Image (cartoon, rainbow, N blue to C red; front, side, top):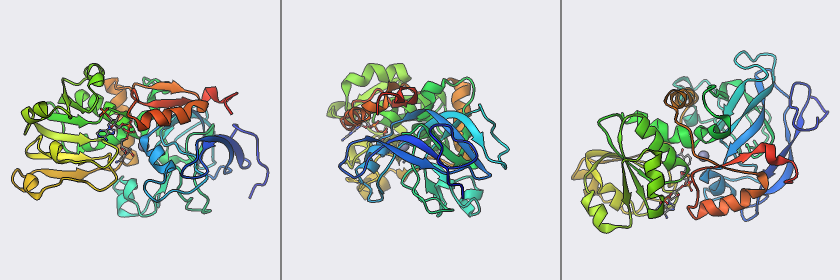
Length: 365
Ligand code: NAP
Ligand code: ZN
């Protein structure tokens, strides 16, 4: 075991390094600067200088322990892009200087049926990017609200050259979480798709569904976001609080992607599905209210769920976005503005993903 701790952010081989990070010490604590340690590179590890990290609503849920699985101190962040600064002796897929990206998971056993199928997110031994437990030494993982990270090569994706690195970070969670169910349920040119909730996930859902050729409707509680929704690629906007408009849209959609981040009555959304229509829940990791068996059985409707995506599909999504020029709409902030961004996100005031620019790290601590 190496004992020397090198100053941040030059993570390479040789020993653990200190990282300037931003995290919370408890479920009601604000984000504050903190120094964390990144491990010395193992043979299969890649060290990445983080240039940008997206702020996902899950970061706020996790910081507040909404799902009862949080550990503190916690450094959130699972939408990570940056540049490789060091590689372990067994790394074959990356070299220093490459653009690299890390999403919601940083390890798994790579041997179970799910890993073999490329669905590492279902591995019983998956390790979350933050608040997870390292499989080898049991240490708690820290996420991307930091200046660098060390991740084994199998969990690092390539960022295609045509993607703007300052905007690409949200693809690593919001992008894959919307791409995966759209693909799984065969969304394409003949699909009538509704995306519920215009935030980080929702705006990627609109862009991706439109790029797949679908006819897309933004279903939102915020009439003032209507024009933006159209600019993102939505063909229609449906205000979910407008009962007459909701009634008129009954049985209209083949597929609804529901990104609403809190428990809510899903019956108004179910009624929008055609016979055999599918609604995929990605937002509310919570009890679903208003699921009436009749609304399902009488129309052969399906409610499904979806969790991020595996590593092969995440790379496929990045390549799809490069090919179709699908890039997130982001608002850049410095680390000192994370608390304010979280407050705004909690109120639905996000246009449409906050991205922390790590170049602004100096002076913010
Ligand atoms: P976000 O940026 O905060 O956007 C959520 C949007 O939902 C809001 O902008 C708002 O849009 C709408 N909304 C908020 N409160 C609402 C309410 N009470 N009723 C109806 N609509 C409401 O959040 P996000 O980052 O997209 O994340 C969305 C959810 O997905 C979070 O719960 C997150 O934890 C979860 N998530 C799940 C996965 C997965 O793998 N399944 C992955 C990532 C995130 P409008 O103003 O348009 O109504
Ligand atoms: Zn996320």
